[in-house]
Amino acid sequence: MAIFRDHAENPVEHDRAIEDRRRHRQLVEKSIKENLGDVLSEESIIGESKNKKFKIPIRGIKEYQFVYGNNNGGVANGTGEEKRGDKVGKASEQGGNGPGSAGNQEGEDVYETEITLEELLDYIVEDLDLPNLDRKKYSEIIVESSGRKRGYQRYGINPRLAKKKTVMAKIARKQGKKRALAEIGKGEEIERFPFREEDMRYYKVKKKPKKESNAVMLFIMDVSGSMDNSKKFLARSFFFVLSRFIRRKYNNIAFEFISHTTLSKVVNEYEFFHKAESGGTYISSGLNKALEVIREKYPPDMWNIYPFYASDGDNWSEDNERAIKAVNDLCEISNLFGYAELLPSTYSTTMYYRFLKEIKKKNFAMVVVKEKKDLWNALKYMLSKELKEEG
Image (cartoon, rainbow, N blue to C red; front, side, top):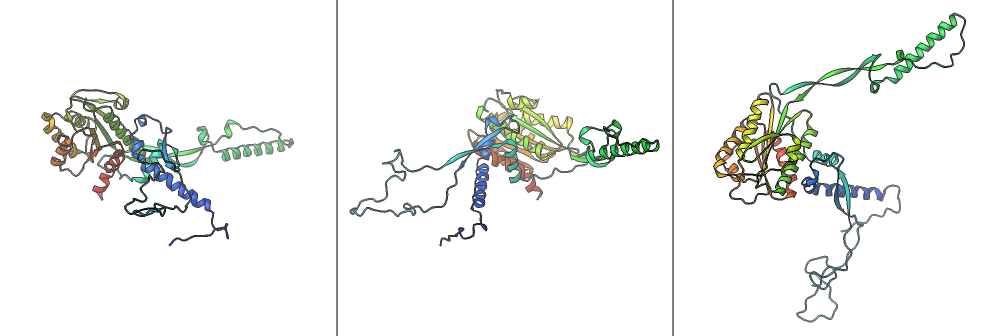
């Protein structure tokens, strides 16, 4: 049963505009979350600043109204001139003469809203809660952070200028000068009394030690010939969003970037996200390079280790056993090892199914991204995997 509320009698009690704004806000947030996958997989997102704006389509909000006709399936209105066997209600719902014809009905309003990358990350943070990094024997380092204000001092930097205390010091100096003048019979009012360097007072800030989790993210990407442009862009988008989100969540994270074909190498961040290569594929080369970097720089008993690997799953068969061994070795020393298979061309020969069958480690997380819009769900699964295991 429909319920109608009359707000005309007491307009002060209920502001209809409030309800409209609430509905609009909910619609905007719903559209943003529904389009997260498309935005995150955009090629233009890589390397952009936090103020880069992305456009998201939003359907217009319409007032409630009665609509006649075509309300229930199997129900239609006739003209009264129908004969036995005639079909009723089969005309195009868009007012045309058949499929593909032009309609004459009003379309749905759609407009675009703009959202920055920083705001986009806010929605990701709201939708996903990352776990705290594990604490290991020496996995916390002490860093200095600004603590509370502890008194005043006569030197410092302008942002720490204590204005009130400075004015009080000037007034005290002025009163002292007045008393001195009065004692020698010159008690006239002092007309001009400027600030001096000796009046300046600055907040004394005591440095407070702060513990930071010590963690390293190793991003490993297959850049071989089988990874075409669409796959490479998707892999880079995956790693770019992951790195931006991790940096936003945690304060002290080290990153290592590894790209590989049949050979692997450690590259800088710019090369990782922009340089293209080609060649054959040995998945084990990238994984073994990660193991080498960990041995040299990140002892597992001192560091939280998080390798993430992206590939289309194609690999030379002679390398499959080496790849499986490398995955097991990485899982032994890692908090979480994530494997993302992007736009696989086949489903019978990719490494996803070999890993699914032979890797039994609980800290090994695998996802398959079959199309761009799956990227966000893949990221959510990867980032929440450790939380589920700990819970």
